[in-house]
Image 1 (cartoon, rainbow, N blue to C red):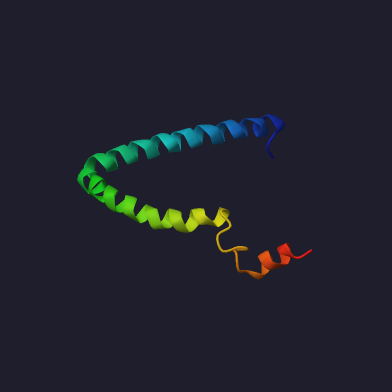
Image 2 (image 1 turned 90 degrees about the horizontal axis):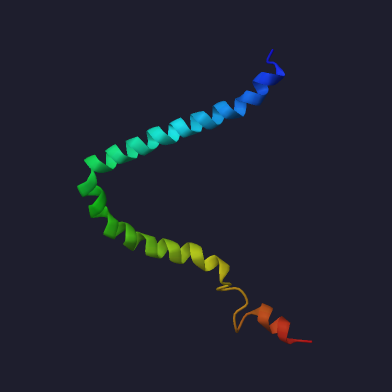
Length: 81
């Protein structure tokens, strides 16, 4: 059974493990990018073009588009006393 002192040290081990993982992930990303730079940079224009419709779809949810427009039932109800 674990003692009280061991329970207090557990978050420190988790933080250290997270930093080690982030370090390895950063090194792996750097090596991957350096080996595949031509492919990655060649895809950037296409990723930018693909981001446009995706942003359009996901970002218009907060504007209220299609909710209570000029001819909808909701706006007619709001005009009535």
